[in-house]
Length: 165
Image 1 (cartoon, helix red, strand yellow):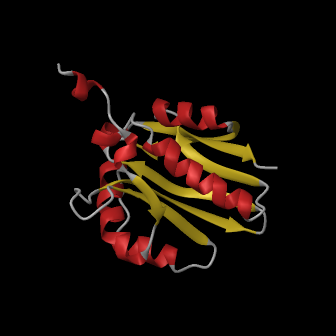
Image 2: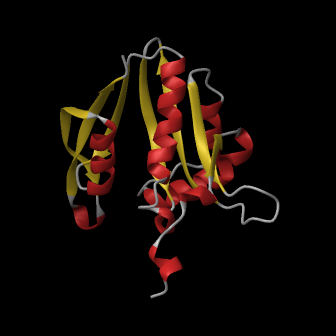
């Protein structure tokens, strides 16, 4: 294996605000990460809600492959926020994009005076759980048998919270 294939460069992506024009790409990404993907119309409808915002990871410049590497949607109401969804393209996972997308959300929430951020994650998604713990999230509740998997299996959703204050 050559040295360049051992490492994935996250600097190949810019984290930029998610716009309505990004909804088709976001929907295609969502389909790669979730059993029940959201349509571009559903993502667009969320983006049109005042408290919802998001970020998308894109390759910069005209000469670059402009495919999206991941995106995140969040909602802020009063001083409480929640991650509505986050997904990173499978071939771009473990390259720091999830960290960078969450970092963009955290910067915006802190700038807007949010006190806490909540999210739900499948306990079976160990990489995501590890990322959230590294960011400082704590598990505050569990929803047993919340996520459906192939073959009828079900797994627990962890409700996690990060104090932003």
